[in-house]
Image (cartoon, rainbow, N blue to C red; front, side, top):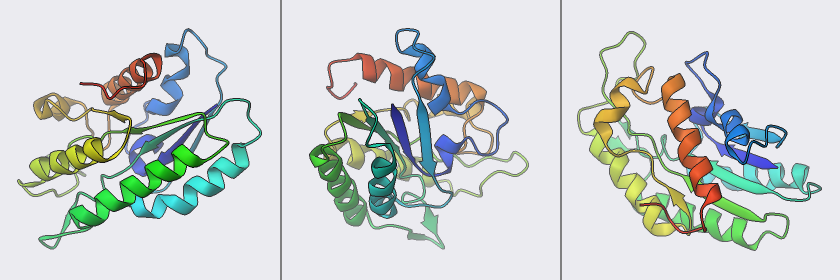
Length: 196
């Protein structure tokens, strides 16, 4: 079973397209029957996921094989009134603690962290009002995540590719969700090392 925990990005907000978690099973050796459970909330920060993960894993612990995919950090990386919403050191500590918790959990066979999509200023109607410094900030937080956790799936680079992959500067379009699903499936097929 694939258990996805995170924020609004894996929920598929702002798009009618199929969200990336539900696109992954058909990419895994044609296994369209692999169950997927998504436990995510709008506005959640990485540190908030500790309780969410414990509860979600407890509900799925009877599954014979459980892979947990964590897709969050977008809210942590945001600036709020010019100040960091979550301090980089606190973000790193939260990522490390969650990584260790999942590694030690007896019901979890494998886990990985799906990297941030870049947070982009956009003039599209309904776009999230990100500052011009936001793309670099989201890349810095994604780098922190990659350096902290054992298994990280990078998505953000090149940033320019994401201009057409988001609806509003953060939430993916159908193409964006397809890209994330492809990267996650490639990581799950891999040997467990961090992707380049």
